[in-house]
Amino acid sequence: MAESAKKVAQQTEDRLEQVAESVRRKFDKVTEGTFGDKIKEGRFADAVDHGIDQGRRESRNPKTG
Image (cartoon, rainbow, N blue to C red; front, top):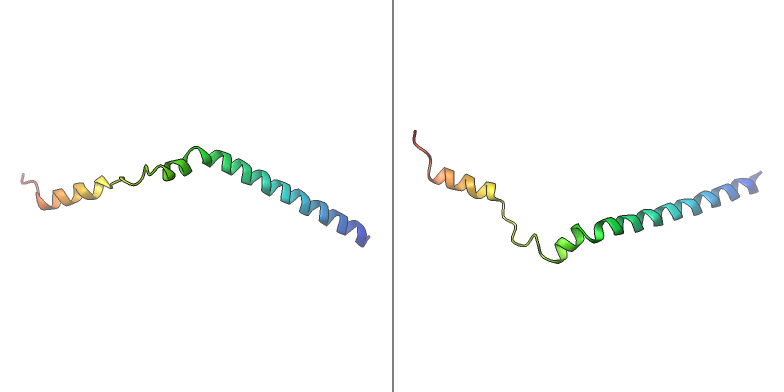
């Protein structure tokens, strides 16, 4: 009985390793041409939070009404 439990445990471990590898490959495939490339190409290097700039302008030049 203990031998069959070891066999089941080994099969389960092998299957989990296969699932983990499959998930890694799919994740790499999904992210390869998207977010990772954007970072590598520096697309976020010039990103500016325009909301902060607008808030600064409004606080320096309050509208009078």
